[in-house]
Image 1 (cartoon, rainbow, N blue to C red):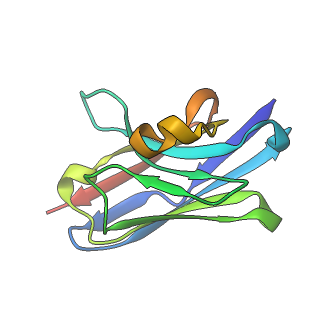
Image 2 (cartoon, one colour):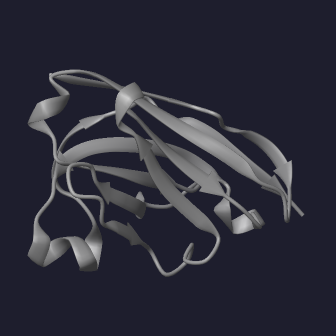
Length: 127
C-alpha cells in the first residue's frame, strides 16, 4: 500500500504561481512513477505531468509545457508540481497518483498502472 497526500492548492489570480506537494508513505518502493492529474469542473480527469522516480525522466502534457515543473525530493518521499503563469483553464482538483514507469509509454502519457491516488487539492485561478 502507498498513501499519497497532496497539499498546496489555493486560489490565485491569472499569471500567479502555486506549488503543489505530494507526500508518499507506505510501500513506496513498489512504485516507480508518480504523476499529477487534474479534473476541471464538469470534465474528465486528465494527466498533467509525471516523473519516473527512480531514474528521473519527466513528462508534461502539452497544455502545461513551459509553465509547470515536476520535481522530487527523495529524502522526503515528496513530489512537487511548480505551477507558473497560471490560467483560468488550470482551475481543477489536482491529484497525485503512484504507478509504474514504462519506458515505451512514458513519453506519450506518463505513468501507467496507476494503483494509488491521493485525495486531491483544489486549485482555482481567477481572471
